[in-house]
Length: 302
Length: 302
Image (tube, rainbow over all chains, first blue to last red; front, side, top):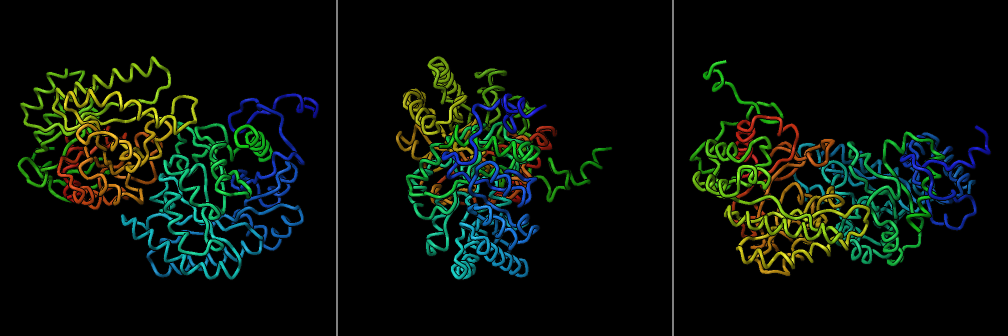
């Protein structure tokens, strides 16, 4: 196939394979202004690929993950994104703060302090915290939640010192047992509000909170506590692996435009990340995935 | 194998296959007093099998499903359970009240009126309502929720006339899109409280609401609105079919004893159903499943 043929044929969407509904917006297109690529959406891309991919696509912000950043080097990653002129909307992720064992607990705190340092070095808008699930064998949800509060007491001074904002991520109740005991925006705000707004905010991820009847009220309450907005769709039937069950924007049931409007009305003006954990998306070519994201962003979000 | 060997060997639990932790409590055991078998737990049992199974196991209450009841006949089912001396803790289920199409809407209302009549004939403690998900192609969750309220306005007079209590079931947010747009006890109570308590209550099902940080407060608020308490565990990894992802009591992460204690403190004194949608449980012999339920009930619930 030649370039000409490629340009003429409608590029299929990832992962549906359906023809694209519109031309792909590109560099300089003002509609892409607040779009950020969370690196997890293009799982196979390292930091270099992801940065180059964003620049090529005209995406001005990126949400980085610690593992690829460490692989490339924190300093080198910071220089790379700065040289490319990208904003780092978030660093994912700290957390996992529910261990009852004293050694595991100290290791978790130390790792979170390192994550704060990395976020500072990258100039990340926030450090996303996935707070952790129930400890093995435990059925004591209130105790696990209390443990998260305890950890924050210990981490906030370091976050303030490094000028890094911690972003508590309430997670869909499908993950309460094994990943994140904070299940609602209201609960995350109850916890965040114990600390200065500069130190602790919340993540509003459409996949995690779209179902909540209190969503409009809690987003309005959140206001300046909204540290990060992330998007993925809820698709049915739910893919068999609960951890990889998020859908491409527009493939599912969430009113993404309405969701972003609520965040905007609450005063959020920052970047909006697209973060999709999905085996079919991850199997696709990163540039094709990002092109689909850019099209769906225009079609379903802004 | 002989009877003697069978009696001596510890009977394996369903579905884990692990040896039973205790002898199976039997007929007349006061510990089984509030236990009700929701018929769905023994999916392969029709009404006759389930009634006979409960009597043989010493379980005094049963939650019936409309399909097997219709198969055996509503009148005949009512006579069978009455002759066996069983209480009918609930009839499952009405609902699916979110259709925007006028014909589908009228069919749903008519079907729910029939369900109310059946619940009356069976002397069921309540008619469980699974309210329905988003209509096909819709992303308008508030509209679907409003549609449920509209349907209740139309159904409550018939429920009052037949002396049947409707029980709104808030469902785990894993089902918000395709099964039940009511996602929390608080939301279900907001809706129930528009109507007389005799006409509309709520279902507190551990699987659906265990993760909710507001659970203690909302159960306390519910008080006499608690029309049904149902139990299943939350297991990880979550089975691949989201509809069949519930676990046997004690196999998962939920503090079932604490859950029942909250309902009791709120003033609930009725039967407690065990309702487990799980392919491995359904594949097992009904009597073995019910024996496991009776043992786990003693070990993890009361």
